[in-house]
Length: 245
Image 1: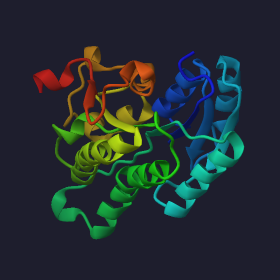
Image 2: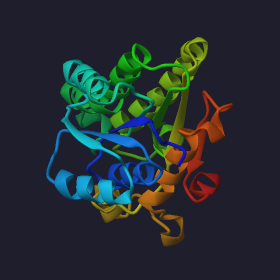
Image 3: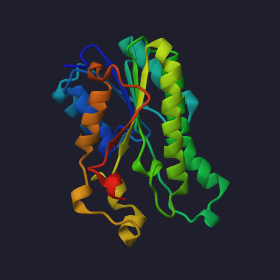
């Protein structure tokens, strides 16, 4: 029970990867804060989280692109649980347009969620966490190798890696670790609804497709004391896909 008496905030907690992370941390005793704009799947997930072993779970309606929402989520977690020990920045969106068709609004829509959302939670976690706190950012292999029509997403995820490194430096004197996970192709609606996958622009070998639980297991490792000497690093969880791209 590596997360007993600890509180974990997971953003994008109602999605495929997010819900898997929530359930994995709950199974090791974490108190859970589900931070998401959508509450559509929340009741079922919350019920499962309690069944998996979490002593408590709280749903915070949170748009990660709003710093006010992020601050309210952090403050609400402190009021309810008296600590924030792990923040998992998982919320993310994609867009699919050629560079010449993109507008500033298109860029900011993605950057506000994928990059600034992670920044806001890191900022407010740093103001709250005690030594031993951990931030885990869910980036993407697109941060390193990408494709056509995904410029804002790839750029945002690359920036998240830079944010992770800086946070690890500034967090070290505070006793706070910061690491990033780079998922590859994961079996979620976000993968199969991807227009590039549907059109064949992005080729997916079925042997390269992982499960949301694979990402959740990596989060549980990096978020635990088993990884207490790991900070400022990125962990590829892609079934070796990057190695052959």
